[in-house]
Length: 301
Length: 326
Figure (cartoon, rainbow over the protein chains, first blue to last red):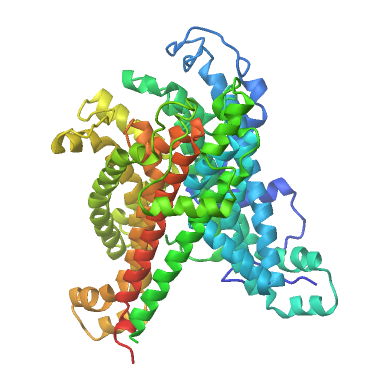
Protein backbone atom coordinates (compact mmCIF):
# COMPACT_ATOMS: atom_id res chain seq x y z
CA UNK A 1 0.00 0.00 0.00
CA UNK A 2 2.61 2.49 1.05
CA UNK A 3 4.84 3.33 -1.82
CA UNK A 4 7.99 5.35 -1.52
CA UNK A 5 7.60 8.73 -3.09
CA UNK A 6 10.00 11.43 -4.02
CA UNK A 7 9.69 14.25 -1.50
CA UNK A 8 11.78 17.35 -1.98
CA UNK A 9 14.42 15.55 -3.93
CA UNK A 10 14.72 12.69 -1.46
CA UNK A 11 15.20 9.56 -3.43
CA UNK A 12 15.82 5.96 -2.56
CA UNK A 13 18.84 4.50 -4.27
CA UNK A 14 17.99 1.14 -5.85
CA UNK A 15 19.73 -1.47 -3.71
CA UNK A 16 22.24 -3.60 -5.61
CA UNK A 17 20.74 -7.09 -5.75
CA UNK A 18 23.21 -9.64 -4.49
CA UNK A 19 22.84 -13.33 -5.25
CA UNK A 20 23.71 -14.27 -1.67
CA UNK A 21 22.17 -11.96 0.94
CA UNK A 22 25.07 -10.59 2.99
CA UNK A 23 24.71 -10.48 6.76
CA UNK A 24 23.83 -7.21 8.47
CA UNK A 25 27.41 -6.67 9.62
CA UNK A 26 28.77 -7.08 6.12
CA UNK A 27 26.25 -4.54 4.83
CA UNK A 28 27.11 -2.09 7.58
CA UNK A 29 30.80 -2.51 6.85
CA UNK A 30 30.21 -1.79 3.15
CA UNK A 31 28.26 1.39 3.99
CA UNK A 32 31.05 2.41 6.34
CA UNK A 33 33.77 1.73 3.78
CA UNK A 34 32.04 3.98 1.25
CA UNK A 35 31.73 6.94 3.63
CA UNK A 36 33.97 9.97 3.23
CA UNK A 37 36.76 10.27 5.76
CA UNK A 38 34.96 12.85 7.93
CA UNK A 39 31.88 10.63 8.28
CA UNK A 40 34.05 7.58 9.09
CA UNK A 41 35.76 9.60 11.79
CA UNK A 42 32.35 10.69 13.10
CA UNK A 43 31.03 7.14 13.18
CA UNK A 44 34.05 5.81 15.06
CA UNK A 45 33.82 8.63 17.61
CA UNK A 46 30.08 8.10 18.15
CA UNK A 47 30.55 4.34 18.59
CA UNK A 48 33.34 4.97 21.08
CA UNK A 49 31.09 7.31 23.10
CA UNK A 50 28.26 4.76 23.08
CA UNK A 51 30.69 2.05 24.23
CA UNK A 52 31.93 4.21 27.12
CA UNK A 53 28.38 5.18 28.08
CA UNK A 54 27.14 1.59 28.13
CA UNK A 55 30.10 0.06 29.95
CA UNK A 56 30.81 3.01 32.28
CA UNK A 57 30.75 1.01 35.55
CA UNK A 58 33.30 -1.49 34.20
CA UNK A 59 35.59 1.11 32.62
CA UNK A 60 35.70 3.61 35.46
CA UNK A 61 38.43 3.05 38.06
CA UNK A 62 36.25 4.37 40.92
CA UNK A 63 32.57 4.78 41.79
CA UNK A 64 30.68 7.80 40.41
CA UNK A 65 30.64 9.96 43.57
CA UNK A 66 33.45 8.28 45.49
CA UNK A 67 35.85 10.73 47.15
CA UNK A 68 39.30 9.29 46.56
CA UNK A 69 41.79 12.05 47.30
CA UNK A 70 42.36 15.70 48.17
CA UNK A 71 40.69 18.57 46.30
CA UNK A 72 42.08 19.53 42.89
CA UNK A 73 44.97 17.05 42.90
CA UNK A 74 47.17 17.41 39.81
CA UNK A 75 47.42 14.80 37.06
CA UNK A 76 49.22 11.67 38.32
CA UNK A 77 49.50 7.93 37.76
CA UNK A 78 46.75 7.19 40.28
CA UNK A 79 44.42 9.91 38.97
CA UNK A 80 45.19 10.39 35.23
CA UNK A 81 43.31 13.71 35.07
CA UNK A 82 43.59 14.65 38.73
CA UNK A 83 40.68 15.13 41.11
CA UNK A 84 37.84 17.64 41.17
CA UNK A 85 36.71 20.21 43.73
CA UNK A 86 35.51 17.51 46.15
CA UNK A 87 38.40 15.10 45.59
CA UNK A 88 36.59 12.78 43.17
CA UNK A 89 38.57 11.15 40.36
CA UNK A 90 38.07 13.24 37.22
CA UNK A 91 38.49 10.34 34.79
CA UNK A 92 35.73 8.43 36.58
CA UNK A 93 33.47 11.47 36.45
CA UNK A 94 34.21 11.88 32.74
CA UNK A 95 33.29 8.25 32.02
CA UNK A 96 30.05 8.40 34.01
CA UNK A 97 29.37 11.80 32.46
CA UNK A 98 29.18 10.10 29.04
CA UNK A 99 26.38 7.92 30.34
CA UNK A 100 24.40 10.70 32.10
CA UNK A 101 24.88 13.59 29.68
CA UNK A 102 24.33 11.61 26.48
CA UNK A 103 21.53 9.52 28.00
CA UNK A 104 19.56 12.56 29.09
CA UNK A 105 20.10 14.32 25.75
CA UNK A 106 18.96 11.26 23.77
CA UNK A 107 15.91 10.86 26.00
CA UNK A 108 15.00 14.54 25.56
CA UNK A 109 15.47 14.47 21.78
CA UNK A 110 13.39 11.29 21.54
CA UNK A 111 10.60 12.89 23.54
CA UNK A 112 10.76 16.05 21.42
CA UNK A 113 10.40 13.93 18.26
CA UNK A 114 7.51 11.97 19.75
CA UNK A 115 5.61 15.17 20.62
CA UNK A 116 6.59 17.27 17.61
CA UNK A 117 6.37 14.42 15.10
CA UNK A 118 2.94 13.26 16.24
CA UNK A 119 1.48 16.78 16.34
CA UNK A 120 3.07 17.67 13.00
CA UNK A 121 1.59 14.57 11.36
CA UNK A 122 -1.76 15.24 12.99
CA UNK A 123 -1.77 18.86 11.80
CA UNK A 124 -0.97 17.90 8.22
CA UNK A 125 -3.40 14.96 7.99
CA UNK A 126 -6.35 16.62 9.75
CA UNK A 127 -5.66 20.12 8.42
CA UNK A 128 -8.21 22.91 8.86
CA UNK A 129 -8.56 24.71 12.18
CA UNK A 130 -6.44 22.16 14.09
CA UNK A 131 -3.51 22.84 11.76
CA UNK A 132 -4.07 26.60 12.08
CA UNK A 133 -4.29 26.48 15.87
CA UNK A 134 -1.19 24.30 16.30
CA UNK A 135 0.86 26.27 13.79
CA UNK A 136 0.03 29.66 15.37
CA UNK A 137 0.88 28.27 18.86
CA UNK A 138 4.23 27.07 17.54
CA UNK A 139 4.86 30.47 15.90
CA UNK A 140 4.41 32.24 19.20
CA UNK A 141 6.49 29.71 21.16
CA UNK A 142 9.30 30.08 18.62
CA UNK A 143 9.27 33.87 19.00
CA UNK A 144 11.15 33.47 22.31
CA UNK A 145 14.77 32.21 22.12
CA UNK A 146 14.83 28.62 23.40
CA UNK A 147 17.47 29.09 26.10
CA UNK A 148 15.67 32.15 27.49
CA UNK A 149 12.31 30.35 27.50
CA UNK A 150 13.90 27.35 29.20
CA UNK A 151 15.37 29.65 31.87
CA UNK A 152 11.92 31.14 32.58
CA UNK A 153 10.32 27.70 32.85
CA UNK A 154 13.10 26.40 35.07
CA UNK A 155 12.64 29.34 37.44
CA UNK A 156 8.94 28.47 37.70
CA UNK A 157 9.17 24.70 38.05
CA UNK A 158 12.56 24.48 39.75
CA UNK A 159 15.65 22.67 38.55
CA UNK A 160 15.48 18.88 38.40
CA UNK A 161 16.38 16.38 35.70
CA UNK A 162 12.73 15.50 35.21
CA UNK A 163 11.72 19.16 34.67
CA UNK A 164 14.76 19.74 32.49
CA UNK A 165 13.97 16.86 30.14
CA UNK A 166 10.31 17.80 29.90
CA UNK A 167 10.91 21.54 29.35
CA UNK A 168 13.59 21.14 26.69
CA UNK A 169 11.61 18.37 24.95
CA UNK A 170 8.45 20.49 24.74
CA UNK A 171 10.32 23.59 23.57
CA UNK A 172 12.39 21.69 21.03
CA UNK A 173 9.35 19.81 19.73
CA UNK A 174 8.20 23.08 18.10
CA UNK A 175 11.14 22.81 15.71
CA UNK A 176 10.34 19.15 14.98
CA UNK A 177 6.68 20.08 14.45
CA UNK A 178 7.66 22.62 11.78
CA UNK A 179 9.70 20.08 9.81
CA UNK A 180 7.30 17.15 10.22
CA UNK A 181 4.34 19.28 9.16
CA UNK A 182 6.13 20.83 6.18
CA UNK A 183 7.37 17.50 4.80
CA UNK A 184 4.12 15.66 5.56
CA UNK A 185 2.14 18.36 3.73
CA UNK A 186 3.79 17.24 0.48
CA UNK A 187 2.74 13.65 1.13
CA UNK A 188 -0.88 14.07 2.25
CA UNK A 189 -1.85 15.42 -1.17
CA UNK A 190 -0.73 12.18 -2.87
CA UNK A 191 -3.25 9.78 -4.38
CA UNK A 192 -2.38 6.87 -2.11
CA UNK A 193 -3.29 8.91 0.96
CA UNK A 194 -6.58 9.83 -0.71
CA UNK A 195 -7.16 6.13 -1.43
CA UNK A 196 -6.49 5.26 2.20
CA UNK A 197 -8.92 7.95 3.32
CA UNK A 198 -11.61 6.61 0.95
CA UNK A 199 -10.97 3.09 2.21
CA UNK A 200 -11.91 4.40 5.62
CA UNK A 201 -8.55 3.79 7.27
CA UNK A 202 -8.25 5.29 10.73
CA UNK A 203 -6.43 8.55 11.37
CA UNK A 204 -3.67 6.72 13.24
CA UNK A 205 -3.21 4.32 10.33
CA UNK A 206 -2.91 7.13 7.79
CA UNK A 207 -0.46 9.01 10.00
CA UNK A 208 1.83 6.11 10.85
CA UNK A 209 1.49 3.75 7.87
CA UNK A 210 0.93 6.07 4.92
CA UNK A 211 2.64 9.38 5.71
CA UNK A 212 5.34 8.61 8.28
CA UNK A 213 7.43 6.17 6.17
CA UNK A 214 7.69 8.81 3.46
CA UNK A 215 9.01 11.58 5.69
CA UNK A 216 11.44 9.36 7.58
CA UNK A 217 14.72 10.28 5.80
CA UNK A 218 14.52 14.06 6.48
CA UNK A 219 13.33 13.35 10.02
CA UNK A 220 16.29 11.03 10.62
CA UNK A 221 18.78 13.67 9.55
CA UNK A 222 16.94 16.19 11.69
CA UNK A 223 17.24 13.85 14.67
CA UNK A 224 21.02 14.13 14.48
CA UNK A 225 20.94 17.91 14.24
CA UNK A 226 18.35 18.29 16.99
CA UNK A 227 20.36 15.93 19.20
CA UNK A 228 23.37 18.24 18.85
CA UNK A 229 21.23 21.26 19.64
CA UNK A 230 19.57 19.63 22.67
CA UNK A 231 22.92 18.27 23.87
CA UNK A 232 24.50 21.74 23.65
CA UNK A 233 21.49 23.41 25.31
CA UNK A 234 21.43 20.96 28.23
CA UNK A 235 25.20 21.29 28.60
CA UNK A 236 24.90 25.07 28.60
CA UNK A 237 22.17 24.94 31.24
CA UNK A 238 24.22 22.50 33.34
CA UNK A 239 27.20 24.80 32.92
CA UNK A 240 25.05 27.68 34.18
CA UNK A 241 24.20 25.50 37.21
CA UNK A 242 20.57 25.12 36.19
CA UNK A 243 20.61 21.80 34.38
CA UNK A 244 21.68 18.39 35.62
CA UNK A 245 22.26 18.72 39.37
CA UNK A 246 25.08 17.31 41.53
CA UNK A 247 26.13 14.71 42.54
CA UNK A 248 25.26 13.31 39.09
CA UNK A 249 28.41 13.35 36.95
CA UNK A 250 27.73 15.56 33.94
CA UNK A 251 30.10 17.29 31.55
CA UNK A 252 28.48 20.73 31.59
CA UNK A 253 28.47 20.84 35.40
CA UNK A 254 32.05 19.54 35.50
CA UNK A 255 33.25 22.50 33.45
CA UNK A 256 31.54 24.83 35.90
CA UNK A 257 32.85 23.06 39.00
CA UNK A 258 36.47 23.00 37.85
CA UNK A 259 36.49 26.34 36.01
CA UNK A 260 38.68 28.03 38.65
CA UNK A 261 41.61 25.82 37.55
CA UNK A 262 41.82 27.75 34.26
CA UNK A 263 43.10 30.81 36.11
CA UNK A 264 46.13 28.73 37.22
CA UNK A 265 46.84 27.58 33.67
CA UNK A 266 45.50 24.06 34.27
CA UNK A 267 43.59 22.83 31.20
CA UNK A 268 41.54 20.21 33.13
CA UNK A 269 38.16 22.01 32.71
CA UNK A 270 38.67 21.82 28.96
CA UNK A 271 38.42 18.00 29.10
CA UNK A 272 34.65 17.75 29.74
CA UNK A 273 34.06 20.74 27.43
CA UNK A 274 36.16 19.01 24.77
CA UNK A 275 34.20 15.78 25.28
CA UNK A 276 31.00 17.70 24.47
CA UNK A 277 32.61 19.42 21.49
CA UNK A 278 34.04 16.21 20.00
CA UNK A 279 30.70 14.41 20.10
CA UNK A 280 28.75 17.28 18.48
CA UNK A 281 31.38 17.64 15.76
CA UNK A 282 31.23 13.87 15.12
CA UNK A 283 27.43 13.84 14.89
CA UNK A 284 27.53 16.85 12.55
CA UNK A 285 29.98 15.06 10.25
CA UNK A 286 27.75 11.98 10.04
CA UNK A 287 24.58 14.04 9.50
CA UNK A 288 26.37 16.00 6.77
CA UNK A 289 27.14 12.75 4.98
CA UNK A 290 23.63 11.38 5.50
CA UNK A 291 22.01 14.55 4.10
CA UNK A 292 24.36 14.45 1.15
CA UNK A 293 23.52 10.79 0.51
CA UNK A 294 19.73 11.01 0.87
CA UNK A 295 19.19 14.29 -0.93
CA UNK A 296 21.87 14.25 -3.58
CA UNK A 297 22.18 18.00 -2.92
CA UNK A 298 25.44 19.74 -2.32
CA UNK A 299 25.79 20.66 1.32
CA UNK A 300 25.16 24.37 1.28
CA UNK A 301 24.68 26.35 4.49
CA UNK B 1 -1.57 52.62 -1.25
CA UNK B 2 2.03 51.85 -2.09
CA UNK B 3 2.52 48.07 -1.81
CA UNK B 4 5.72 48.56 0.19
CA UNK B 5 3.96 50.64 2.84
CA UNK B 6 1.11 48.15 3.20
CA UNK B 7 3.44 45.16 3.46
CA UNK B 8 5.65 46.91 6.00
CA UNK B 9 2.60 47.96 8.04
CA UNK B 10 1.32 44.37 7.96
CA UNK B 11 4.66 43.09 9.26
CA UNK B 12 4.82 45.71 11.99
CA UNK B 13 1.27 44.81 13.04
CA UNK B 14 2.19 41.14 13.14
CA UNK B 15 5.29 41.94 15.18
CA UNK B 16 3.27 43.91 17.73
CA UNK B 17 0.79 41.02 17.97
CA UNK B 18 3.63 38.54 18.53
CA UNK B 19 5.10 40.78 21.23
CA UNK B 20 1.73 40.92 22.99
CA UNK B 21 1.31 37.14 22.78
CA UNK B 22 4.83 36.64 24.13
CA UNK B 23 4.20 39.04 27.01
CA UNK B 24 1.02 37.10 27.88
CA UNK B 25 2.97 33.82 27.86
CA UNK B 26 5.78 35.19 30.01
CA UNK B 27 3.26 36.66 32.42
CA UNK B 28 1.09 33.53 32.49
CA UNK B 29 4.09 31.50 33.70
CA UNK B 30 3.48 32.75 37.21
CA UNK B 31 0.06 31.07 37.13
CA UNK B 32 1.81 27.72 36.81
CA UNK B 33 3.71 28.18 40.05
CA UNK B 34 3.33 25.18 42.31
CA UNK B 35 1.27 25.79 45.47
CA UNK B 36 4.20 25.52 47.88
CA UNK B 37 6.12 28.19 45.99
CA UNK B 38 5.76 30.92 48.62
CA UNK B 39 7.20 28.70 51.35
CA UNK B 40 10.02 27.69 49.00
CA UNK B 41 10.92 31.36 48.55
CA UNK B 42 10.44 32.41 52.15
CA UNK B 43 12.12 29.36 53.63
CA UNK B 44 10.92 26.55 55.84
CA UNK B 45 10.31 28.77 58.84
CA UNK B 46 7.65 30.95 57.16
CA UNK B 47 4.39 31.11 59.09
CA UNK B 48 1.05 30.87 57.24
CA UNK B 49 0.56 34.60 57.92
CA UNK B 50 3.85 35.53 56.23
CA UNK B 51 2.96 33.30 53.26
CA UNK B 52 -0.43 35.00 52.93
CA UNK B 53 1.15 38.44 53.20
CA UNK B 54 3.71 37.49 50.53
CA UNK B 55 1.00 36.24 48.19
CA UNK B 56 -0.93 39.46 48.72
CA UNK B 57 2.16 41.56 48.06
CA UNK B 58 2.72 39.92 44.68
CA UNK B 59 -0.99 40.33 43.99
CA UNK B 60 -2.02 36.67 43.94
CA UNK B 61 -5.35 37.65 45.50
CA UNK B 62 -6.41 39.54 42.37
CA UNK B 63 -7.75 37.90 39.17
CA UNK B 64 -5.01 37.13 36.59
CA UNK B 65 -6.40 39.41 33.86
CA UNK B 66 -6.32 42.45 36.16
CA UNK B 67 -2.79 41.59 37.20
CA UNK B 68 -1.65 41.21 33.60
CA UNK B 69 -2.85 44.68 32.68
CA UNK B 70 -1.29 46.16 35.81
CA UNK B 71 1.99 44.43 34.94
CA UNK B 72 2.09 45.33 31.25
CA UNK B 73 1.01 48.90 32.08
CA UNK B 74 3.95 49.17 34.45
CA UNK B 75 6.35 47.63 31.92
CA UNK B 76 5.35 50.23 29.32
CA UNK B 77 6.37 52.92 31.82
CA UNK B 78 9.64 51.15 32.63
CA UNK B 79 8.33 49.76 35.93
CA UNK B 80 8.93 46.01 36.11
CA UNK B 81 7.67 45.56 39.68
CA UNK B 82 9.62 44.51 42.74
CA UNK B 83 12.22 41.81 43.10
CA UNK B 84 11.46 38.79 45.31
CA UNK B 85 14.98 38.77 46.69
CA UNK B 86 14.07 41.22 49.45
CA UNK B 87 10.58 39.79 49.97
CA UNK B 88 11.87 37.75 52.89
CA UNK B 89 12.03 40.96 54.90
CA UNK B 90 8.30 41.52 54.68
CA UNK B 91 6.64 44.20 56.73
CA UNK B 92 9.74 46.33 56.99
CA UNK B 93 12.37 47.70 54.64
CA UNK B 94 12.21 48.54 50.97
CA UNK B 95 11.99 45.87 48.30
CA UNK B 96 14.40 46.48 45.41
CA UNK B 97 12.67 47.33 42.15
CA UNK B 98 13.46 45.14 39.17
CA UNK B 99 14.24 48.23 37.10
CA UNK B 100 17.01 49.28 39.51
CA UNK B 101 18.61 45.81 39.15
CA UNK B 102 18.33 45.75 35.36
CA UNK B 103 19.17 49.36 34.52
CA UNK B 104 22.96 49.45 34.88
CA UNK B 105 23.35 45.88 33.58
CA UNK B 106 21.32 46.54 30.44
CA UNK B 107 23.85 49.09 29.20
CA UNK B 108 26.70 46.63 29.91
CA UNK B 109 25.02 43.88 27.87
CA UNK B 110 24.23 46.31 25.05
CA UNK B 111 27.87 47.43 25.08
CA UNK B 112 29.14 43.85 24.79
CA UNK B 113 26.61 42.88 22.12
CA UNK B 114 27.16 46.08 20.17
CA UNK B 115 30.94 45.77 20.34
CA UNK B 116 30.70 42.17 19.09
CA UNK B 117 28.24 43.00 16.31
CA UNK B 118 30.22 46.03 15.13
CA UNK B 119 33.24 43.87 14.30
CA UNK B 120 31.65 40.54 13.42
CA UNK B 121 28.99 41.72 10.95
CA UNK B 122 31.34 43.37 8.39
CA UNK B 123 33.98 40.68 8.91
CA UNK B 124 31.66 37.75 8.31
CA UNK B 125 29.92 39.39 5.35
CA UNK B 126 33.30 39.96 3.70
CA UNK B 127 34.51 36.43 4.49
CA UNK B 128 31.23 34.90 3.28
CA UNK B 129 31.38 36.87 0.05
CA UNK B 130 35.00 35.83 -0.57
CA UNK B 131 34.23 32.17 0.16
CA UNK B 132 31.28 32.29 -2.24
CA UNK B 133 33.29 33.98 -5.01
CA UNK B 134 36.26 31.61 -4.64
CA UNK B 135 34.07 28.59 -4.13
CA UNK B 136 35.80 25.20 -3.66
CA UNK B 137 39.20 26.87 -3.43
CA UNK B 138 41.54 25.96 -0.59
CA UNK B 139 40.50 29.16 1.19
CA UNK B 140 36.84 28.16 0.94
CA UNK B 141 37.43 24.61 2.15
CA UNK B 142 39.58 25.64 5.09
CA UNK B 143 37.11 28.30 6.18
CA UNK B 144 34.29 25.78 5.79
CA UNK B 145 35.92 23.16 7.99
CA UNK B 146 36.96 25.66 10.66
CA UNK B 147 33.52 27.27 10.84
CA UNK B 148 31.68 23.91 10.91
CA UNK B 149 33.82 22.95 13.89
CA UNK B 150 33.33 26.31 15.60
CA UNK B 151 29.55 26.21 15.36
CA UNK B 152 29.41 22.62 16.64
CA UNK B 153 31.23 23.18 19.91
CA UNK B 154 29.75 24.71 23.06
CA UNK B 155 30.31 28.44 23.58
CA UNK B 156 31.97 27.92 26.94
CA UNK B 157 34.55 25.62 25.33
CA UNK B 158 35.64 28.38 22.96
CA UNK B 159 35.55 30.89 25.81
CA UNK B 160 37.71 28.86 28.18
CA UNK B 161 40.26 27.98 25.50
CA UNK B 162 40.62 31.69 24.72
CA UNK B 163 40.88 32.49 28.42
CA UNK B 164 43.57 29.83 28.92
CA UNK B 165 45.63 30.95 25.95
CA UNK B 166 45.11 34.71 25.77
CA UNK B 167 44.77 35.56 29.46
CA UNK B 168 46.65 32.91 31.45
CA UNK B 169 49.45 31.46 29.27
CA UNK B 170 50.04 34.72 27.40
CA UNK B 171 48.54 37.49 29.55
CA UNK B 172 47.41 39.82 26.78
CA UNK B 173 43.81 40.35 27.91
CA UNK B 174 41.97 40.45 31.22
CA UNK B 175 40.58 37.01 32.13
CA UNK B 176 37.64 38.50 34.05
CA UNK B 177 35.53 41.25 32.54
CA UNK B 178 34.61 43.08 35.74
CA UNK B 179 33.56 46.57 34.69
CA UNK B 180 31.82 49.21 36.76
CA UNK B 181 29.79 52.21 35.56
CA UNK B 182 32.76 54.57 36.03
CA UNK B 183 35.25 52.44 34.07
CA UNK B 184 36.76 54.68 31.36
CA UNK B 185 35.88 53.77 27.78
CA UNK B 186 39.21 52.33 26.63
CA UNK B 187 39.69 50.24 29.74
CA UNK B 188 36.13 49.00 29.28
CA UNK B 189 36.97 47.91 25.74
CA UNK B 190 40.11 46.14 26.97
CA UNK B 191 38.26 44.35 29.74
CA UNK B 192 35.41 43.31 27.42
CA UNK B 193 37.80 42.09 24.72
CA UNK B 194 37.85 38.39 25.64
CA UNK B 195 34.08 37.85 25.97
CA UNK B 196 33.62 39.82 22.76
CA UNK B 197 36.23 37.77 20.88
CA UNK B 198 34.74 34.44 21.98
CA UNK B 199 31.26 35.60 20.94
CA UNK B 200 32.68 36.86 17.66
CA UNK B 201 34.25 33.51 16.82
CA UNK B 202 30.91 31.74 17.11
CA UNK B 203 28.82 34.45 15.45
CA UNK B 204 31.25 34.98 12.57
CA UNK B 205 31.22 31.24 11.86
CA UNK B 206 27.43 31.13 11.70
CA UNK B 207 27.03 34.35 9.78
CA UNK B 208 29.79 33.62 7.31
CA UNK B 209 28.36 30.20 6.40
CA UNK B 210 24.90 31.63 5.90
CA UNK B 211 26.20 34.54 3.82
CA UNK B 212 28.16 32.16 1.65
CA UNK B 213 25.11 29.95 1.07
CA UNK B 214 22.89 32.96 0.29
CA UNK B 215 25.37 34.40 -2.22
CA UNK B 216 25.95 31.05 -3.93
CA UNK B 217 22.21 30.59 -4.18
CA UNK B 218 21.89 34.04 -5.71
CA UNK B 219 24.76 33.65 -8.19
CA UNK B 220 23.09 30.51 -9.53
CA UNK B 221 19.96 32.36 -10.64
CA UNK B 222 19.29 32.76 -14.38
CA UNK B 223 19.44 36.57 -14.52
CA UNK B 224 23.02 36.53 -13.20
CA UNK B 225 23.90 34.06 -15.92
CA UNK B 226 22.22 36.40 -18.39
CA UNK B 227 24.19 39.40 -17.14
CA UNK B 228 27.43 37.42 -17.49
CA UNK B 229 26.51 36.28 -20.99
CA UNK B 230 25.80 39.88 -21.97
CA UNK B 231 29.50 40.44 -21.31
CA UNK B 232 29.19 42.72 -18.29
CA UNK B 233 32.23 43.25 -16.10
CA UNK B 234 32.25 41.07 -12.94
CA UNK B 235 32.07 44.17 -10.72
CA UNK B 236 28.97 45.35 -12.53
CA UNK B 237 27.37 41.89 -12.28
CA UNK B 238 27.89 41.87 -8.53
CA UNK B 239 27.06 45.49 -7.77
CA UNK B 240 24.20 46.18 -10.19
CA UNK B 241 22.56 42.78 -10.55
CA UNK B 242 23.36 40.61 -7.55
CA UNK B 243 23.54 43.12 -4.71
CA UNK B 244 20.01 44.62 -4.98
CA UNK B 245 18.59 41.13 -4.56
CA UNK B 246 21.07 40.16 -1.89
CA UNK B 247 19.93 42.66 0.75
CA UNK B 248 16.99 40.51 1.83
CA UNK B 249 18.98 37.31 2.49
CA UNK B 250 21.84 39.30 4.04
CA UNK B 251 19.40 41.15 6.29
CA UNK B 252 17.94 37.83 7.40
CA UNK B 253 21.40 36.40 8.06
CA UNK B 254 22.46 39.40 10.14
CA UNK B 255 19.23 39.51 12.16
CA UNK B 256 19.24 35.76 12.79
CA UNK B 257 22.78 35.92 14.10
CA UNK B 258 22.26 38.98 16.24
CA UNK B 259 19.31 37.09 17.70
CA UNK B 260 21.66 34.17 18.27
CA UNK B 261 24.05 36.59 19.96
CA UNK B 262 21.36 37.14 22.60
CA UNK B 263 21.66 33.53 23.73
CA UNK B 264 25.44 33.49 23.44
CA UNK B 265 25.68 36.57 25.62
CA UNK B 266 24.15 34.67 28.56
CA UNK B 267 26.90 32.03 28.56
CA UNK B 268 29.73 34.46 27.78
CA UNK B 269 28.70 36.76 30.64
CA UNK B 270 28.77 33.88 33.10
CA UNK B 271 32.16 32.60 31.91
CA UNK B 272 33.85 35.99 32.17
CA UNK B 273 31.82 37.21 35.18
CA UNK B 274 30.59 40.20 33.18
CA UNK B 275 27.88 42.17 35.00
CA UNK B 276 25.19 42.03 32.34
CA UNK B 277 21.56 40.97 32.03
CA UNK B 278 22.40 37.37 31.12
CA UNK B 279 24.24 36.83 34.37
CA UNK B 280 21.45 38.55 36.29
CA UNK B 281 18.90 36.26 34.68
CA UNK B 282 20.87 33.10 35.49
CA UNK B 283 21.30 34.20 39.11
CA UNK B 284 17.61 35.04 39.35
CA UNK B 285 16.58 31.66 37.95
CA UNK B 286 18.70 29.94 40.61
CA UNK B 287 17.13 32.14 43.32
CA UNK B 288 13.69 31.77 41.70
CA UNK B 289 13.27 35.53 41.65
CA UNK B 290 10.37 35.41 39.17
CA UNK B 291 9.80 39.16 38.53
CA UNK B 292 13.44 39.64 37.53
CA UNK B 293 13.36 36.51 35.32
CA UNK B 294 10.18 37.72 33.64
CA UNK B 295 11.63 41.16 32.99
CA UNK B 296 14.88 39.74 31.54
CA UNK B 297 12.99 37.24 29.39
CA UNK B 298 10.73 39.99 28.09
CA UNK B 299 13.75 42.13 27.17
CA UNK B 300 15.51 39.23 25.41
CA UNK B 301 12.33 38.20 23.57
CA UNK B 302 11.68 41.80 22.58
CA UNK B 303 15.16 42.18 21.11
CA UNK B 304 14.73 38.87 19.27
CA UNK B 305 11.35 39.79 17.79
CA UNK B 306 12.45 43.32 16.85
CA UNK B 307 15.56 42.00 15.07
CA UNK B 308 13.51 39.53 13.07
CA UNK B 309 11.01 42.26 12.23
CA UNK B 310 13.84 44.51 11.11
CA UNK B 311 15.17 41.78 8.81
CA UNK B 312 11.72 41.38 7.30
CA UNK B 313 11.44 45.11 6.70
CA UNK B 314 14.91 45.34 5.14
CA UNK B 315 13.89 42.48 2.86
CA UNK B 316 10.70 44.26 1.84
CA UNK B 317 12.02 47.78 1.25
CA UNK B 318 14.98 46.56 -0.80
CA UNK B 319 13.02 44.05 -2.86
CA UNK B 320 13.37 45.20 -6.49
CA UNK B 321 10.06 43.54 -7.41
CA UNK B 322 8.23 45.69 -4.86
CA UNK B 323 10.31 48.82 -5.56
CA UNK B 324 9.53 48.76 -9.26
CA UNK B 325 6.05 47.23 -9.55
CA UNK B 326 4.91 46.43 -13.05
